[in-house]
Amino acid sequence: MTAIAQSVVAQPETREPQPHEILPQSAPGLDLARIRADFPILAERINGKPLIYLDNGATSQKPQVVLDAIANYYKHMNANIHRGVHTLSVRATEAHDAARQTVRKFLNAADTREIIFVRGATEAINLVAQTYGRVHVGAGDEVLITAMEHHSNIVPWQILCEEKGAHLRVAPINDRGELQLDEFAKLVGPRTKIVAVTHVSNALGTVVPLRPIIDIAHRHGVPVLIDGAQAVPHFAVDVQALDCDFYAFSGHKVYGPTGIGVLYGKRALLNAMPPYQGGGDMISSVTFAKTTYNDLPFKFEAGTPDIAGAIALGAALNYIGNLGMDKIAAHESELLNYATETVGAIPGVRLIGTASERAGVLSFLLDHVHPHDLGTILDREGIAIRTGHHCAQPVMERFGISATARASFAVYNTKEEIDALVAGIRTAREVFA
Ligand code: C6P
Image 1: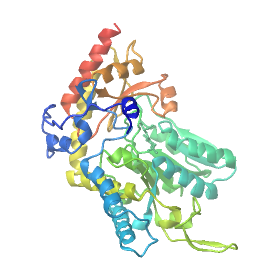
Image 2 (image 1 turned 90 degrees about the vertical axis):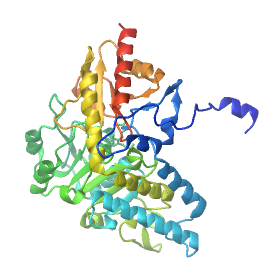
Image 3 (image 1 turned 30 degrees about the vertical axis):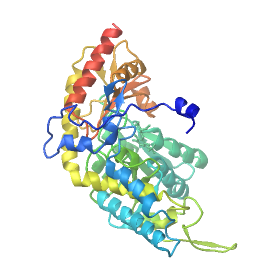
Image 4 (image 1 turned 45 degrees about the vertical axis):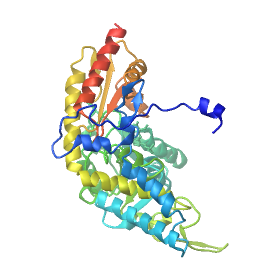
């Protein structure tokens, strides 16, 4: 790099990992100091302070095993998959297949053919809207979602409805941010062609009770897509026990890299659906007269996939699987309760989203302080939170606000970090008093 280039590239403030700097209290069954040492970025200093990363809902940090999996792929097996007879291609194909098997186990899906690698939750939902949706939704039909969806689970359905002359129906939520199940049930009818619901709201933290929703929809013969982007990092998900028809998530929120995600779909549904994109690998034969499509899951994986991403996602899921999803859930639930109590006790704080079951996310407002100002003040203390509408503008509208401050948690977070967050909010309150 030239001297000029060096001078314009911001040099990160790094130092050796010092996992003891924030002395984490032990979490039952988890060695937090050890876990924190697995995440190199947690040793970063931000504005001279140790990084306190509470923006995990946007994307989580990556453990060394994930970084190693990416490097290892490019160092020792980089080749295209399903195409070569040479050794590197066989290695890459086997590693990619193993990652799919890891995802299957992680979701407890019945078959690896039900696991489609995509770019993320957004692409997974668009895939279902543009394949299942285009075949089954017609003029006058209805797609049912809830009032707490992320834009990724609204806009793909709006595009479909506009194209087909169908209607988007929205099940309401109450003032605590909980789905009104009785109202939801009333909205399922003969014109409903698909139900698409988040598992956990990214703006409110609400955990949606999926079993009754899926039962109601299935009684009407309607399939259900679950947006699991904010669920899979926080607790174990079993797609067979849920009996959902589709389940979507992003790798980067569950300690994997960006650019990779998963669509789970029941085999019979996926088999009956037309392909999403055309290209290499999704065909079994091509002539100018006719193309026949490949078997599942490849029918939905046109072109060279993110091979390293899938392998690294497998590494991420193995990592948290080894820690234990139940232990992660217990630790994070303790963090969320502690944050709710301590942040909620600050004068002038209003919590947005107080559902009886929540995971991962604490959304709030501070009187007289815009969330962006709060975020900026916290950043000076090395604390990263997200501020804004969180790509859930209808949720903001429901609560009559334009933005919130959001702290979102991961396995490596500690109560001491929440204490620092509370101190930072108190500082902001004084600054703006
Ligand atoms: N929410 C957040 O900060 P992608 O962009 O495809 O990885 O994930 C989209 C998505 C879908 N559903 C839910 C519930 C989500 O929370 C997200 C992403 C991030 O809350 C970025 S806006």
